[in-house]
Length: 104
Image 1 (cartoon, helix red, strand yellow):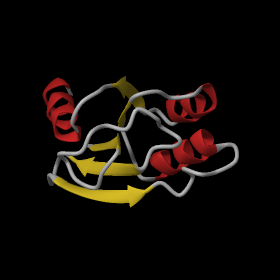
Image 2: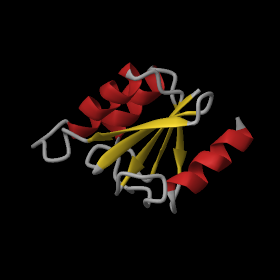
Image 3: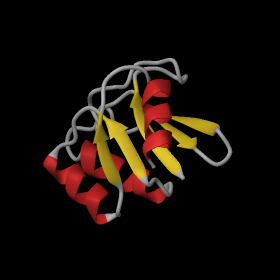
Image 4: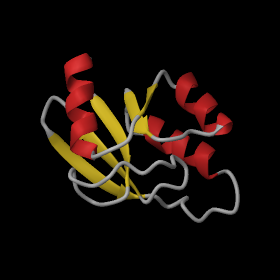
């Protein structure tokens, strides 16, 4: 299963970024291989539509769970329509991953 976590840094010890569409990084974690990929958010400075574009990108990566702080209404619609579960969280990326692995 692929989990996407918004992150303030490039590793699993980083803090979760509370902003979805304007987060610094997306970390895509595969629970089957325990491998992850870090992608800098290209829509972070977009004048508008950052959340919607980020939502489409996250969906295109095969994400099943999104862990973040806050998701705006446009992005939420895109994410839910793609069948992705949204989990609001704070703290370290690795802690959120471990919690999601236990619960799913």
